[in-house]
Structures are given as structure tokens and as C-alpha cells.
Image (cartoon, rainbow, N blue to C red):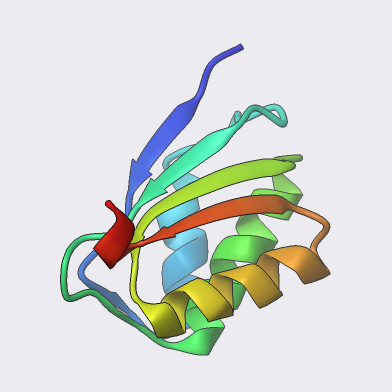
Length: 95
């Protein structure tokens, strides 16, 4: 089973930007995903929800996130849980 590695941009504020990011990865077929967050990244909550929506639409049920700030870790946890996506989030201090 393949693991898709996606590097997120330095910033993102709207759901459409998240959807556009995942347009480059159309066929995930429910396979696990690793999201890599760059240092000092800044995300709005609608961007995080757009990522969760995009992952759910591709049948993804497992995500590992590396480099999240405390705020982003909480946002990802909540957004992905609503979409029934299991997430392991490693904050930037844990990477």
C-alpha cells in the first residue's frame, strides 16, 4: 500500500486553496497520507477544514501530520475527527 507524502504550503486561509492543493493528488484510493507542515506555517481554520474535506473525498482514513503548531494540531484533530479520519499529529516540538 502506497503512502502519499504531501508538503503543505507556508500559509493557507481558505478551503478552495486546500482543494486546489489536493487536485494534484486525485487518486489516493483511501491510502494513508503524510502531511508535512513547514516551520512557521500559518493556516486558517477554513483551510484546515478544506484539507479534511479533500482527504475524506478521496477515501483517506489515516493521516500522519508532521510539524504542526499547537493551534494547528488542535484544528487538524477536530476537523479530521468530524470526517472520521484517524490522525496522528506530531507537533513541531516533537519532530
